[in-house]
Amino acid sequence: MKTGKKRTSSVNVVTLGCSKNIFDSEVLMGQLKASNVSVSHESEEYGAETVVINTCGFIGDAKQESIDTILDWVDAKKNGDVDKVIVMGCLSERYKDDLVKEIPDVDSWFGTRELPRLLKTLKADYKKELVGERLLTTPIHYAYFKISEGCDRTCSFCAIPIMRGLNISTPIEELVKNAKDLAANGTKELLLIAQDLTYYGIDLNGKRQLADLLRALSDIEGIEWIRLHYAYPSAFPKEVLDVMVERANVCNYLDMPLQHISNTMLKSMRRMITKEKTINLVKDIREKVPGIAMRTTLIAGYPGETEEDFQEMYDWVKETKFDRLGIFAYSHEENTSAHLLEDDVPEEVKQERVNTIMELQSGISHEINLKKVGKSIRVLVDRIESGFYVGRSEHDSPEVDNEVWVTMDDEHYLSVGEFVNVKITDAEPYDLFGVVAV
Image (cartoon, rainbow, N blue to C red):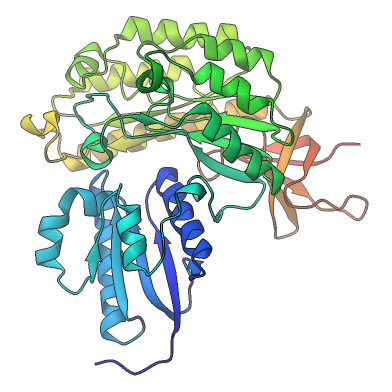
């Protein structure tokens, strides 16, 4: 029964999942603000009339988190803490028909490309001229920067094309305008995101244009770091590496999910690349851009993965020594081609393999970090915490990579969003410690 609590006519947006969802929430919030609708992001206090939950539907754990969050807010609605619960995003796109039946107390469901209809429900007008403008949920000095939507790849394990459709690139001139607006408001770092950065431009004029886009963005005054996330390895456009070498503000950093190294697994995953080509690609990237930090993502427990396949991946990780690495247990997803295969690796084995790789990577990361002790590196300050300035180097992306903890002292006052040279004094597997270099 409702308690009759007083609420403002406002919207609280709750974001789950990846950086692409963060971007979408920020666009939604920007549109709401332009229509004079009061909006907040992940407010911890009840008071908004409506909550909009931007969901993730990628893998099992993410789907469960989304469902749990929806149910929590449905309970809040029943208790009278909110009036309306609206769900958007990937989970809603993928499972709307089932969810409508299972959770009838949700007021409305919207997919990944229904922003105008969602805004109308929220009594706001969709303003096409504001496309690309957002209310940032990140600190102002960095912003996720989505350059395309959807994906044309056919990876057997991935449901992204089901949820977000085929690749649609945003034209360069529009992205440059958006980046200039961000820079004018104090953004210094652009984190380029897409399901596949390397496919950028093909749908616009039949050729890969990521290198052209990077040059255009790097010319923008005030943008000091540009970081690349989610590059596909097959037919990787090597001219992107030339831009990294040419332009100082394009970070020597590349996030390239490789998923596996066993040829048997790569073929079944439909990755369109072999073990030999993968190894040569990593070698070529490192030779072309000395000192580059490479992040990759792997999958453990894919259908048919034998102990030999896993050992092959383990040995490759040990030899390659990626700077940054994450690994996920395989999730058996409906309507993907891999779902036709038997999910034959027990869950406990999947998790054991995940833990084994991460234990190995912890040692690799610690070894790499120890080599930085005594050196000075450029750091961007993200926050102030517990007597430290906490920031990142050009080799580190927010949330997923290492952090640099800089001791505060009476001689140096730093601001969030400021760049500073730091002398590294100590290292742990995923953190560096230092002092302001003089």
